[in-house]
Each structure stands twice: as structure tokens, then as C-alpha cells.
Length: 193
Image (cartoon, rainbow, N blue to C red; front, top):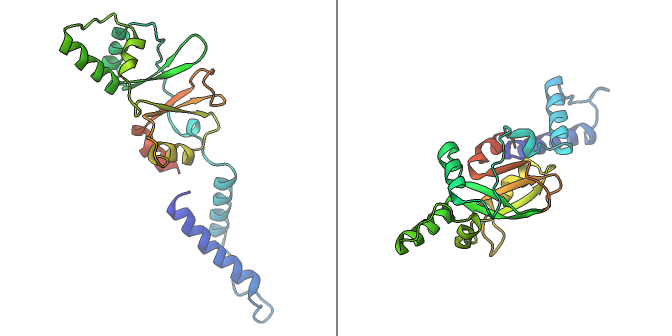
């Protein structure tokens, strides 16, 4: 819930208190909400009872994922075509990790230093260069916009922010990804919070 929503709730709470705890003047209430205020209160109620979900707010984009056995050249083709920088890696039955362009950059630097650059090297070999920030959090399809904002922008004490959120049916590693959410999506999420 945004700052304006919290401010409105306080103001509407004050209105409620005046209406309930003030005596009538000449048999009439001293405050009556106008139709626009009632509509605003109902809108806030709906926002609280049915918060916006990530899947309901972000535009649908196909999730480009790879298996650990695929060659890194396939990933690099997708980076060139779509300018993506995070790729979920799924083995036969579950999520294995997140391959980021930062990880690919570390692998590339290592290979260039040893003259061992091989475009057919597997994704799993490249993922050995992943660091803590090359991670993703898995969330269920019911994940709210506010939950996603919190996950992408506020690390728990001693932990690292994930590079992406992967939305699955129930937020489990054994489920196929429905969407991937990255920090570039934060403006859209904030606009709908």
C-alpha cells in the first residue's frame, strides 16, 4: 500500500470517528461523506481485500529458459536477440538456478585469460561462475505486487537481493516458470501498488 493510500486511510478514519462519535446538531449528523469519498473508500477496501498480483500487472512475456546441458552459445543468441540478462535454468524435473549475464561475464573473463573460450561449453559449466547475487526467488502465481517489490528491493539482514523473481503456480522448484520479474519491472510494479 502506497503513501497516498495510507494517508487516505487516516483521513477516512478521522471522518468515521467524527461520524460515529459526534453528537447530532439539530437532529442531523454534522458530517456525511459525499459519493466520491464513498467510492474512494470502496476502492481502498477492494485494494486491501484483493491486492494486485504480479501476473495481473506485468505484461506477459515468454520465459526463455535453458537446461544445464545446452551450449552457452544458445544463451548468447538470446542475449543478442532480446537483450535479456537473466535466464532460469531447469533440469529434467526442477529449477537449478539463475544464469545471469554477470555470471557469463565472469566465465568469459576466465576463459579469455586461459585461451579456452569454447562456444559449445555447457550452461552448467558457466554456472560454476555464479555468485550470491546471481540468484532468483521463486514465488507463487498469487504473489502480490507489494510482495514482489519487497523481494526485489529490500534484502533481509545478511542476505543478498535476488537478481530476479520466478513466478510458478505454487512457487515450487519443480514447477515450470510462468513469468520472470526483474528490477527493470519495478517502475511498473510501483505504479500499480
